[in-house]
Image (tube, rainbow, N blue to C red):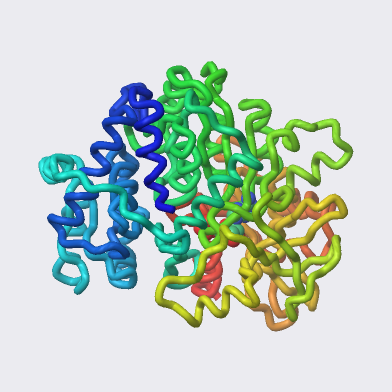
Amino acid sequence: MNLAVWIERNARRWPQRPAIASGDLVRTDWATCARRVAAVAGGLRSGQGLQPGDRVAIVMRNRPEYLEALFAIWHAGLVAVPVNARLHLDEIAHIARHSGTRVMIVDDEHVADTQPLVESVDTLDALVVAPGSEWDALVRSEPIPLVDRAPTDAAWLFYTSGTTGRPKGATLSHRNLLMMSLSYFADIDPIDPADAVLLAAPISHGAGLYGLPHVARGAVSVIPPSGGVDGDEIAAVLGRWTGVSFFAAPTMVKRLTTDPAIVSADLSGLKTIIYGGAPMYLSDLTDALDVFGPKLAQIYGQGETPMTITALSKADHSDRDHPRWRERVQSVGVPRTDVEVRVVDDDGTALPAGEVGEIVVRGDVVMSGYWEQPEATTDAIRDGWLRTGDVGSFDADGYLTLRDRSKDLIISGGMNIYPREVEEALLRHDAVTAVAVVGRPDPEWGEAVVAFVVADDTMTAPSVEELDELCLEQIARYKRPKDYRFVGSLPTNNYGKVLKRELRQQLDDTA
Ligand code: AMP
């Protein structure tokens, strides 16, 4: 099955319903959208001489043409490589070279930077600029019929966000993305054609993936005019459209929670905020629930099993009277309908509830492997189970609590310390706005705990004694940071994940 069939189907069923909007402005209805997608597909195949299976990268900020490009690539039987547009040019070059990209669709904000890649990347034949005259010409091409695809054919090369080393391309098939979409309906929300999905976070990551179930059900895709996260724009979208859902990183939710435009907005148009991709700390979550009400759902996933390992439902978030509510909202929820999830020891043996080990997952949503990296694939998928590199444990009710990435675990004096626990303890200080805990090599203890603390500059700065005191009240003595570093901000990647390797590097540099 080719996922682009959804566009054709929507065009037949709801030709005049809105398909893509920019803020409150409808850009295309489904009939127009389907016509443009089939024409761009024809133009890419004939004009650019592309064959089914060839890779086409997209380097754009969120804009309506992004979705047209994505579905045109699929309609033509090609493989999409959505690249985070804020990456460094060297990283974009690496992805283009590694994926063997033949054509890159870029917007005018990225054309000057990416133009030299046509020379430096052997496989890259051309850039196509959208929107503009080149895109208009493609839209005027002869439309082609939907190209048949096998379920296992690659649809999307998802380059990992690269918090460690070079990004790897998780090869996501049409079936993987179909399963992801079906399990969205099963575990997060049913979707109605009168609903809307707001694409504020990058389409190249969670927002784009979770946009797909909405397209499948004929909901409108709304792109904020700035292409990004802006409280005023989001408030306006919530006032204009109904049944609005959007994917957001926890940092984005936190930012919106205090945005004056959001706080004073009429939120009746909001259906669901799906957050995930990084830990959401309890204090931020309770603030968000106070502002948004029972509209938050959490997902835990990764590019390798697109956004689908576990979910914590809206009902779980709202059930504040439950005796274990606090533990539950700090968990990542229960396994998704379409996957098996286990916590295993170093030998791959499943561990009982309460024991901590690596999280592994199996199901039809799991990637077939990393693009052209057989060794990395063998390492990641063993006996059909994807090793996530995340460490966690199940409770007796089947809720999974993530500790950390296995590489972020700190071992001090032979004891395992999960940074998240220490971070949660420190965040209870009113004047602490963000914190990241890492391990530093230590001759005596093996590793020592170091906390990077961002303080609220409108309040009296927290003292080391106060922070120590907070830790002693909440966690074992040996988990207390040995060193506090007060910093203005934490380094994050383009998806808002804290780059702990950079913090460790800073410690090495100052050692
Ligand atoms: P990516 O492939 O870039 O989406 O990164 C996936 C990684 O983000 C996972 O392996 C986790 O370490 C982390 N992650 C994803 N979802 C969550 C979540 N809900 N809570 C905490 N960490 C998460």
